Length: 370
Image 1 (cartoon, rainbow, N blue to C red):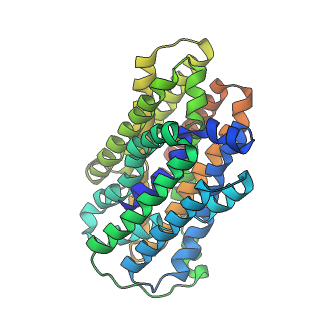
Image 2 (cartoon, rainbow, N blue to C red):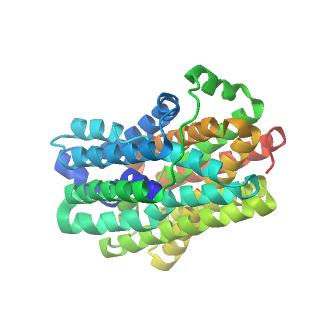
């Protein structure tokens, strides 16, 4: 529930990006950098917040993070200018790494990937439901109303988490230097860069999906269904990856995911360049793109925890940093590519997915195989 709120907050702007850009008097590419700033703040703050809040009881910490997220969204909804919007987006970052660390401690090691898939599944479900709903609400109430709805949802989820989650004590305070010392492990150094590459590939085009779909002659009325298909693929891919990783190992799951994602994005680039309007094919490609974007997180987190099981909270916070570094880098790259045409945006994502596959195969022997 909590990661659903976070995911909706992170990605909802994709549904109304052109309208938000026009309202704040900036270009669509510039408005997309609000996603980059959210992701960058998340990436930098994850290990810092994990250190500062280590001793806080887990339920109080998660509820407090959700309350902060709700207030930050309210600030975004009321932003009079783009710089104020950016500040409010930076303030919205604290929940997901703590949620993943809690999940890892509540279950047996043999089902850990499935538990992480449930938590990460909140982010995936947000792309299936939160973002399309944001698109619909944005049309009815405007983009400010959509962000206000996200703020209300964060506050409601905070109440629900407070009522449902069991009491769990905080852990010992671990200095930031000790947390970052995990980065010296060769296995960790092979996993985290792959997460950055894979998420960058997945999100090069996502923040700009509305103008990208319009360039493919897909009407505004069909956009919400395309977003839903992407999100449905994300939910299925995430949950299936958890079970598949426990059964067949992470390297096989990741290899199939990167290969399929590269192919789907390359075909979308071809459709955009040729001007062929095939909504059914575009929908299938959106489904494949979403599924293989979110199939990578459970196996990657599973690999990290296996390399340092005693430092699970540490490596999960670093994993969240890598995820949002990738999202920010991909969105930044997409913003640079967008003025040069939609095909280049898709091709950039496809190229990064291919690089991620090559990196995985080159480093698989050095890291945990799952």
